[in-house]
Amino acid sequence: MATIKVKQVRSAIGRTKTQKRTLEALGLKKLHQVVEHEATPSVLGMVAAVRHLVEVQEN
Image 1: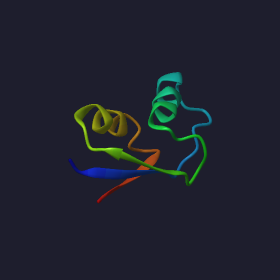
Image 2: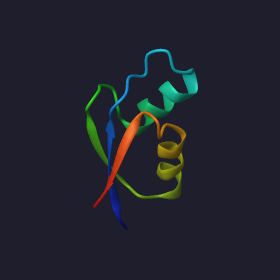
Image 3: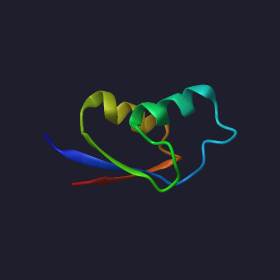
Image 4: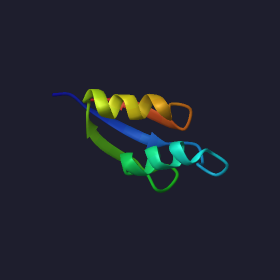
């Protein structure tokens, strides 16, 4: 299965609890932190929910 790299590029300050919890579930705690995940439908849905805060790079 394909993998994706997710990088947090905008702050979670002032965002809703749901968006903060989604970033935490993706493993993102700091700005410019990069995590790698399998491109499953659940992960892609989480990325879509916070697409304005992250950048995605497909491998």
